[in-house]
Image (spheres, rainbow, N blue to C red):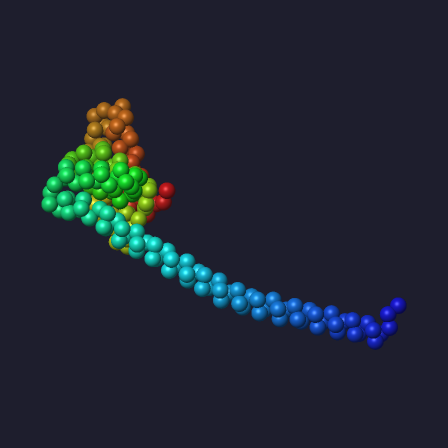
Length: 181
């Protein structure tokens, strides 16, 4: 059996080891929380820089298409857009621009399909705060499309093209209302 003096010494030793371990845990936690905070800040800055770079690249890449659109040269803009799509297939901004051109040309079904594809690829285009937002433009196409496509469906309920367009119109309407995928 242990004597009372030896037992007390072992308890004090255990208490001392426990206190040292506690100090070590606190010191490590303080150090890691500082580095975790800086890691979060670094990630946020990295995301912001990446996004700004993306916006700048899109504006540079699609600048010639925008210039042609402003000059009213819709067909030439479509051709230039097709050139860019060969290099950057599946880019959301290209789909949004294509939808814009198609809407100007009166091809509502194609415009709605392009807008829906662009928004599915990148939902930023219906965000009010986004510098690339096309919310107003897409909203106008959705509003007019709902009227014209509804009338076509009423006249011919079996029209599969109109049914598909209506589904995409509802998708865009949902996204404009703040719904998510």
